[in-house]
Amino acid sequence: MGELGLGEQLSALRIPDLDATLGDVARVRVALSGGAAAVEALVGIPAGAVRPWAEDAIAAELARSGYRLGRLDIQQRIATHAVQPSLSPLPNIRNIIAVGSGKGGVGKSTTAVNLAVALAQDGARVGLLDADIYGPSVPMMLGLHGRPDSPDGKSIEPMRAHGVVAMSIGLLVDQDTPMIWRGPMATSALSQLLNDTRWGELDYLIVDLPPGTGDIQLTLAQKIPVAGAVIVTTPQDVATLDARKALKMFEKVEVPVLGLVENMAVHVCSQCGHAEHIFGDGGGQRMAVQYGVPLLGSLPLDVRVRELGDVGSPIVTSATETATVHSYKMTARRLAVQLSGRRQVASPLSVSLLS
Image (cartoon, rainbow, N blue to C red):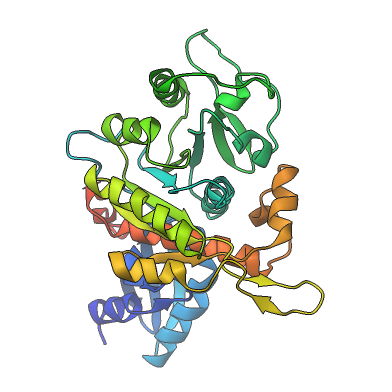
């Protein structure tokens, strides 16, 4: 088999837990020298999603065709993806991803924080914007304290935690100060937080929206270039009913919905191991099928998610790879895969590593 055939063969390898092949997320090239193959992959998602699996899987596939793996080079090139037709992507932020929900109390902020940190752990440059002006919770969940710096009196340096740069109105006001603002003031604050923060170069900016479909969501859709949205829900019918409204809102403003995240899907008793669907069973999956969007993940109801979030240590930073940690990490990776398959403004995957 020649180099081209081997490249196609390797591209067909399926990545565990991601419902994607290597070729779905990477441009694969093979160069043969005797019985050895040099393999290079230009990956359009955070490379940490591929590296732990790739070497053994590629070596085993090559061995079936009579070659040994001489060299494996994996490089990451995350593209800028298309946004709403009336807007253009920001020059320093490749992809803005909105995380929304139809109602409060479904774990949207917890999900946004853990997705952002998980993407950073896989090697992406990630920012997190807390757009919940009235109820900012990101500073507590990331363990951020104090005030951000303003080097020139006009722009703001984001604060950093767990590999993510973050900005929130909660970092600029006292913790107990209520934001008693009408809609225009809140939406103006969101625009300022986005535009005045010195984000640097980012692959992803995760925006944690307030629940519902109000002024801030409309401002985001009309004025901020968004590459895609994620809807967080819980399984019960009343939550998915509201999540449907959020999904339809994004569709109307031409922001693609990358998928659903079903939170609190199942509780496993820490004492006896009994699994119970406290909030119902399968609501997220049924909604995903009905609207033709992927179910990115079903996250368990785990007390440690709350305990660690309260002390500023997102569950994905835990040293122990529990089922909950694994669920969050795989959800973040599936999100990256879904975005990578959408139309790109300029494709870095066209760059050849072998030239």
